[in-house]
Image (cartoon, rainbow, N blue to C red):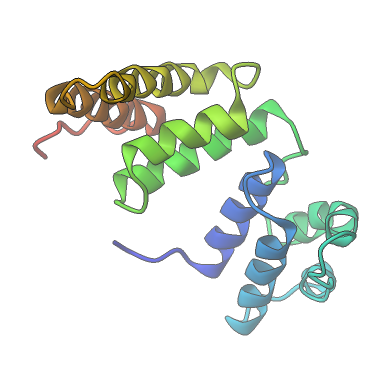
Length: 173
């Protein structure tokens, strides 16, 4: 699995931060990684210099992140924006397909960070989270775990992730 470039990591972390899925400290760390890699801009230095002490770092990040990303020709997603949510869903779908997270992780993430009120792009993932809940509920009723049911939900999540990122590959390839 190829590792992200520092700029891609900054872009992705900033998008995830916009939906509350990444802490400000991760965005600050990604800005520092850019500087270490030789990527530089005046406002990026400011972002990298924000104290990651919990409490005020998000306020400082809100103040400077848009300009830093703009200077680097990256996209800024306003907190709570539909565009940011759409991008965050795609980032997480790519992480599933790259083997960084499980299918269950993706649906739980969508349910927790995008929610039913979020972007329609995540609606199927949230519905699949409900499907996992149903499959897992059988265990609590004392019945044997239906492996084939869970495997079907896993396959459906993978298919949805592929659809979300426009990947037309089949499961075999």
